[in-house]
Length: 145
Image 1 (cartoon, rainbow, N blue to C red):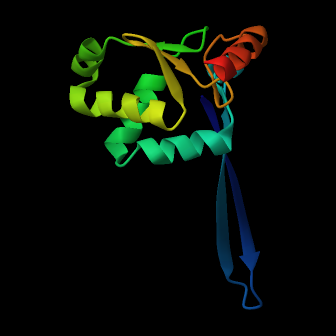
Image 2: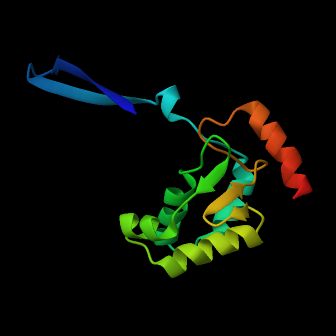
């Protein structure tokens, strides 16, 4: 994100009927934020994504776990995670991360493919670098699994 700020200033003097001079000053701060297109890398079905997140997250720490987990989704729309290393790296408990992953399966957000490998629902979430062709293929596979 890039932020620019502009400060506009205005100064004037007013002379009243008695000949007294009264200074007037005004400033206006304008800020604009720009986001790099390269940084906007995830595509989601917003309504379904928020519903899933509301079912999985019970606290602000859960929201952080959710964010850290699912930003690791690869170009095949799979989450590959070593839970022990992940928990050590982010200082989370294994039980909470395991519970979140299990609940994500129950609500239909993920499907467990193998130990530490989860396929993310391609109708809700498209990972970084995942092509449209891959998503179409995964959507067909998702319905068959």
